[in-house]
Image 1: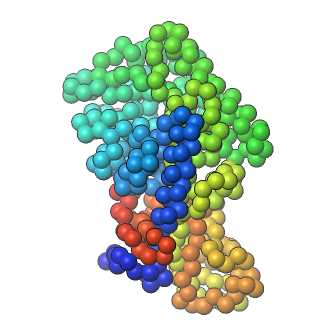
Image 2: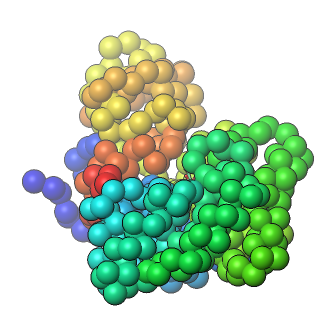
Image 3: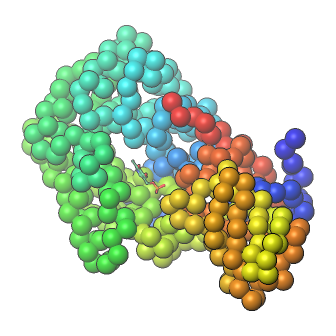
Length: 366
Ligand SMILES: Cc1ncc(COP(=O)(O)O)c(C=O)c1O
């Protein structure tokens, strides 16, 4: 049975649980929203990490125009939670999914990304048949080499073909600079991101020259938004994970601002050696692959190894007084692959449990 003693102190709760420090998360949300306002760019935060409509509502209250989702089913969860302007920044393929997009249009105003006519033509036909109109943007490959139409002629021709369809409206372009987040030298990182974004601004100009308006130019992640948001022509930022500010962003992407807000509360279940403690939170609680978790409040304790249900810590002299039964908190190394392991967030104001939030988008993989 889930525990839900609202008002209880954190230290009294059973473990492991996934915790949000609400003051820190709200401060991070304000930071990202304020950055966007200052730089005259809209904020459309990616919801793929928090997957929780109530958190999306907090983002919208702070100034976000809506959210970015990776999947139709997550977009449905967001729409059911009251979010209207939803970019599905992914390729949507298959009749059932196109039908779901047309149905989603009844309760929200989605935008669908594409990089080929084969994804758009059938979607347009279904939307037209169902009497709805859905916005479509083209993802342009700006160097990530994942999906995306080639910049230049291919993108222009695709946009021209889309404008002729009934059932969809061409609304703009997007690109994701995910390959540039970890560049160490700040000047080099800024230069390479500016070069990538110039592909998008050039594409927008070329579209304008052939008479196709391009109101949306969407890009940016947490590891890059402070550079991307200042680039010419970018109209909105998709940066989302920064509301939790994982160590991955801090250490691997060199993002200095915002505060760690996502942790796992665990219990010491074994003390096999003076310098080794074992916690009840393994890989089924926290994914360490992108970045290892950090131990809170024990400066010389580090995560050594994680297996399915165990997390082994190496303890320096200052943390060797840890005992079996002690509670300990770890900052999640990278939230994206961790939140999907949990049914709910335990949210705290200071050390007091404020709410238990269902992660409504969990398991929404379609
Ligand atoms: C399309 C797209 N936009 C933006 C992001 C950035 O997300 P975040 O800010 O959560 O790192 C990603 C990350 O994978 C992405 O795939």
